[in-house]
Image 1 (tube, one colour):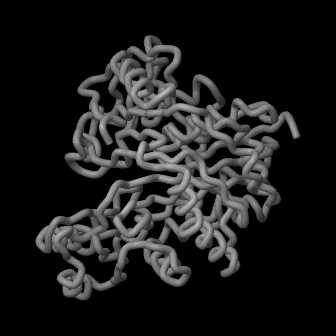
Image 2: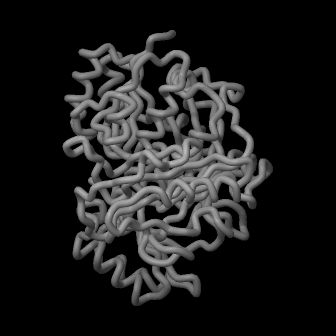
Image 3: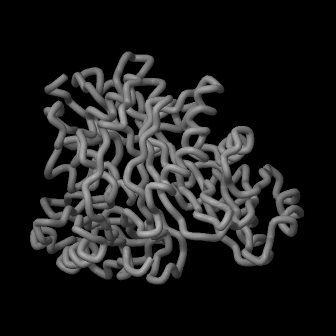
Amino acid sequence: MSGLKVLVIGSGGREHALAWKLAQSDVVEEVLVAPGNAGTAVSFTNVPIADGDLDGLLAFAQENAIGLTVVGPEVPLANGIVDKFQAAGLTIFGPTQAAAQLESSKAFAKAFMAEHGVPTAKAAVFTEYEAAKAALPDFVSADGVVIKASGLAAGKGVIVCDDLAQAETALQEIMQDKSFGTAGDEVLVEERMSGPELSLLVLTDGETAVPLLPSRDHKRAYDNDQGPNTGGMGAYGPPADVDQTLVDEIMTTIVEPTIRGMAAQGTPYVGVLYAGLMLTDAGPKVIEFNCRFGDPETQVVLPMLDGDLAEIMLACINGRLDANLIKQHSGACVTVVLAAPGYPSSYPKGLPISGLDAVPGDNIVFHAGTKLADDQVVTSGGRVLAVTARGADLKTAVAQAYAGVETIQFENAHYRTDIGRGN
């Protein structure tokens, strides 16, 4: 197959990275992004259709002979875009609505893991505020407790609490004040695990599963893991404390039982499965599953992928994934996010961005919250840009990425200075 027209759905840094990697494929003729951002507008063709407009996206794909559609964000997957495209006979990469419940319902995922023996934290699910509040003392330990909105909350529906008072406040915010909307109608009260976190993205055709580069993201807004949780302020890979033996253990104890279990219940999982993991003293355990490429991990994982992403995705869709299709470049990769002032709380939009042309050529700048206004690139979101660099080792990659970051300016731009450094 050649001359393939590919549609990438979404507007963030993850989607820019997907489009960038897909465009390198020998079988891809054209990449379109809906709705895209200022970065994808320069290199590809943006399509002014929102990622939530499933009917509009389907009609566009049909009318424009799209040979492969790749879904970036979780909400269209949770709303059944894959089912809709498949029913129309179109080729699309991602899990069905039923399979995407591994992310769209933390309660579903927790019950699934319990049934299939996948290691994870002890938890209980509640739909009534008073019952959840009464159960808190049973879960609060010296390590604290975690309160999670069960539904989709743009990666922000998790509150890590140090004590009972914080847990009660978190529960109030989620269930009473509706800080995450209907995503908090059902909550999980969960034991707090301790240990380094790890992201492992795995490609699967529903039977075979092959891991991509292990990576680690930085969730907190400020240096030294201080401040509120965000969607991710940067990532790097591979982490020094993760070797092939550990990856094999994760595949054996977590990923493969999950893929087998989803197939066994009639909802085979096809696409990319993101396992958010905690490396505890008792072994790796699942914090959460995501049903799509992680952001900003994708901006690290895809530059390190030595393979044809379009061919790999088609192999997943057609049930013929082979581990030989997926190889990794040597060395390391890091991405640093530049965020708008105030993120992850309220932040201004429309700030002019300068210095993009001065970024060293070895770096890749993935746009996230940007748009074009009268030919000027301006901010349009909380996470604005991600500057990515590959190097022979992590130290080299980090230095190169920050050299790129320092050339870019917009008013009160905020970024962490410790991504990939010392952790």
